[in-house]
Amino acid sequence: MKTIEKDKKYLIQCYTTDDIVFTRGKGMYMYDESGKKYLDFSGQFSACTLGHGNEEMIEALKEQLEKLVSVTSCFATEERAALAEKMIEISPEGLDKVMFGCTGSDANEFALKTAKYYRGGGRVISFRRGFHGSTAGAAAATGKSEMIQENSGISELLPRGFVHSAPPYCYHCDFGKEPGTCGLQCLKYLEQTMLHEGGDRIAAVISEPIFAAGGVIVPPKGFWKGVRELCDKYGALLIFDEVVTGIGQTGSMFACQYEGVTPDILVTGKGLTSGYVPGSAVLCRREIGEAMSKISLHGHTHSCYPLTCRSALKNLEIIEREHLVDNSRETGDYLHEKLLVLKEKYDVIKDVRGRGLLQGIEIEGSPNADKYVLGQEFYETMLENGLITELESRKNLENVVVVMHPALITSRENVDEAVEIIDKSLKTCLK
Ligand SMILES: Cc1ncc(COP(=O)(O)O)c(C=O)c1O
Image 1: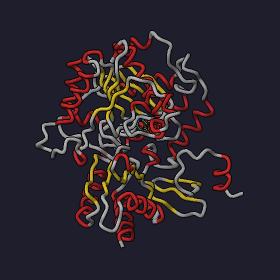
Image 2 (image 1 turned 45 degrees about the vertical axis):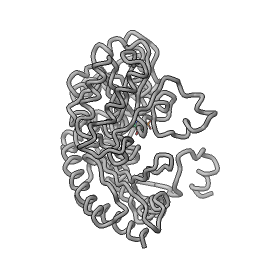
Image 3 (image 1 turned 120 degrees about the vertical axis):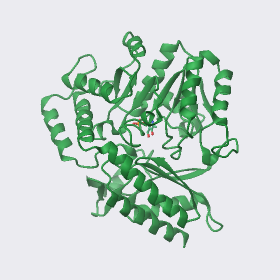
Image 4 (image 1 turned 90 degrees about the vertical axis):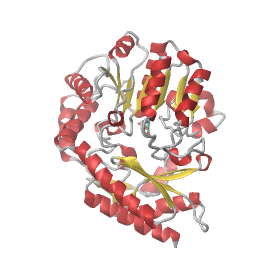
């Protein structure tokens, strides 16, 4: 039986969208069964920071596999202590304690648990169009009405007490305002929501600094400073979910450093280990971490495994040595400029947004093409032409955005190749 047939026969196809079987990867490229080459501008959900098949990483992991792999969180290891120290070193000042996890979702669960425990309960405010994961608390905070929220049976699993505020999405402003003259209505609405939902009894506000899966939504200048002030005013903890934006993806180690806003809790995952081994981390202020040290309500068997810690340490070592965060910023700017040129060329490209190597293209329809059909065709044609991106397109959210978050090793030549494929694919779709 062919791999794809076997896969379809036995595997629950929750996420599968394409009939491609990948067999290997090297650097920025992935190869399918037939040997066809694809330029990976998805970074596999933004996890593959160093690109595929990084030999230095593989050597470090081999060495660690031989040394020690399985150690539960009951015990300390050299790797765990070293990674904890490193995480505090690279994170914004004021975040002095860290906890490790396996995925972005479970790290967000810990962040939410921490906020509830530290604040003695209270509502959690998040934003429509934000994404935080597929476990219960993370899914409840998600504002994209994912399957779990839409299905009345499964949605019983979602905890209560999660409230969604208006997103800072200038292109689709919920208040019909224009950037620059809007008076930050979304911030005013957030304060009303906070007051309405408990005022100084709110546990936390959780958000991605740039909403990735929601369609690369970059909040307007001053928004996060305003949110920080509101959290301070009402005593709510500010949680930044940097599972996508962190570890250099947006051109600074963490997106909040660019904003100059420090959260009380910062969550990271995906690119932390460059995706070679699953891993995530939650950083927080010292007193919050010390409060959590007193409880035994959280832990995963694999969460502090030396192999995970070693992959994160090696990843961070390479990122720093090769100045990959700078590369993300510079090459990301180059990508942004080239996408803006395409925006001038095609009427259906209405907005180009992003920071560093997290960029998105917002598509509208044309008289001959429904935007959802066009978005799907565009995505599939790019794939056919050898470019992997992500398509965020849901009718209930009314947006169609091609999302790109390639590895931090992306070069200008890779950008030129990607943009050529984007151009060629869109031309084909509009014929
Ligand atoms: C912003 C954000 N947070 C959390 C998650 C969940 O991470 P994971 O899939 O590792 O559970 C994701 C996944 O896409 C994400 O985009």
